[in-house]
Amino acid sequence: MLVTSRSYAEYEAMFDLTELPGSVLDCCAGGASFTAEAAARGVDAVAVDPAYELPAPDLVDTVRRSLPATSGIVDEHADSFVWTWYGTPARKDELRIEAADRFLQDVAVAPERYVPGSLPELPFSDGRFELVLCSHLLFTWADKYDRDWHLAALRELVRVSRSEVRVFPLVQQGAGEPVDYLPELLGELTDVTAEIRQVPYEFQVNADKMLVLSR
Image 1 (cartoon, rainbow, N blue to C red):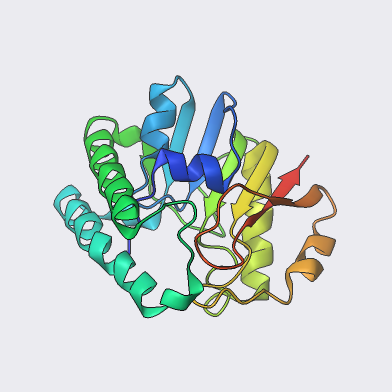
Image 2: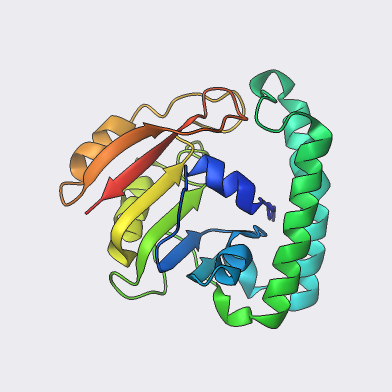
């Protein structure tokens, strides 16, 4: 199991966040520090991820072991990444280590913010959150999860949001190939307005856009 630890600063850029609403869900959050830092800002922030089913010592171990593993993925596909936002690999690693530390501190003192669960069925009521964020799952793993799974996952994200869903990125892992069935999926989401929006972040080549679904 790979549990990535992304920072609040990365979330701000990936999702073009200028301010947060009263309640936010980070879906399949892994070891990100976003929920901890959003909660510290007074937001009703919740993270959901299947990794949270792990006993505490195993979760700590998995988060720590995942830090060098994620760097290895970048090394394997070096030509598919750009360093404009991070500046250097060392800065990226620094952000990720700090995020992992913040996550592990917060999950120890506020475990109620970290809920075990996975798409396409989330353990939350309809419209529970004003904003729902989902990074590096949908479309990233289009080689693993098929079109029907993606449609069900998008509908579930919409179900638990009462205002807006943001999904990043919109290309597959590795070389950043587009997902051919994305336009077709958006055409089936008739109860929301879909917009593909540029964001001030790019690490994986061509991964500089997010999907915004608004009610």
